[in-house]
Amino acid sequence: MKSSTFKLSVVFNSPILGSQSTKEITSEFIAGKAGLKLPADEEKSLPDELERGTTVFHRGAPNDNVYLLFDYHLKGFLKEAAKVFNGKVAGGVKNLKSKVSSTVFVTPRRIALVLPKGCTMHDYLERPLRAETAMGPRVALVRSEMLPEGTSFSCGIEILPGDITEEILRELLDYGYHQGLGQWRNGGWGTFRYTLVSEDAEEAAPLALPVVTRSKNGRKKLKALA
Image (cartoon, rainbow, N blue to C red; front, side):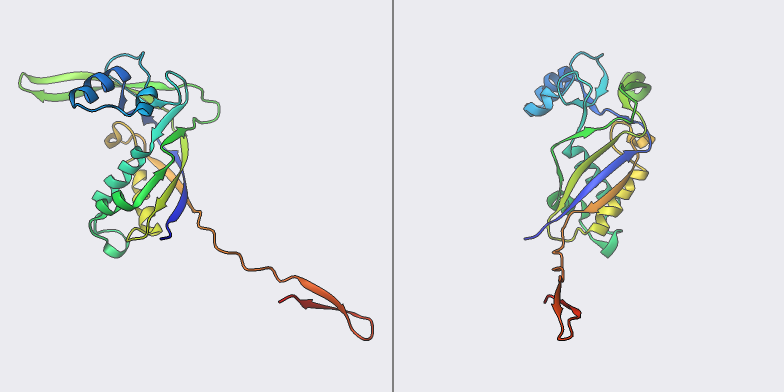
C-alpha cells in the first residue's frame, strides 16, 4: 500500500486568533466537567497566567513565545471543507468528510507558527459576544490572542490510497482563502494562501555515460554506455 505525501506551506492573509481556552479553564472545567483528561502534551503547552475569558495559542513551552497549532486544527479544517464541498469536488466524490477523516493525515502533531520577520510579540483582539439567554439578551467581552498577517507554518500531509487525490486536496485547501483557521474564522480571521509540493520521488532514469574509444585512424569516438 503506497500512500502519497506532500509538504504544505501556509501563509496567513489575515491575523489568526488563538482558539484554545487557558490551562485553568481547559483542564478544570472543559475536560473535568466532561469527565475527560486533557492529553499531557496539550496541557503542558497551554499558558496559565492570562485573563479569564481569553482564548490562546498553545506554546512550545509554558508561557514562552513559540506558538503552536496541533495537527487536529488542520485536519479539522480539511473535514469542514469536505463537508462544504461534498459531491462537488473532482470526480463528484461522496461521503467526502468521512473519507478525509480516514485517509488524510497531518504531521507532525505539534506545528510551529512562524511570525513575520521583525515581529517578536503577539497582540489581543477584544470583541463583544451577544447571546440570547433565558434572562434575555446578554453581551460578554471575548478576548483572543492574535498573531499578525504573514504568520506562516509548514507541515506534512499523507493520503492513503482511496478516493482522495491531490486535486481534491487542493480544492479543499483552496477553501482557506475564504474561511481559515483559528477562532472567529467565520468573521474572516485566519484566512490563508498555500503551496503544496508532492514528496513522492520518482525513480530517476539511469544516466547514460559516454565511453571514449579510438578508431583505426586514431580519432576519438564517443559511445553511450548502455
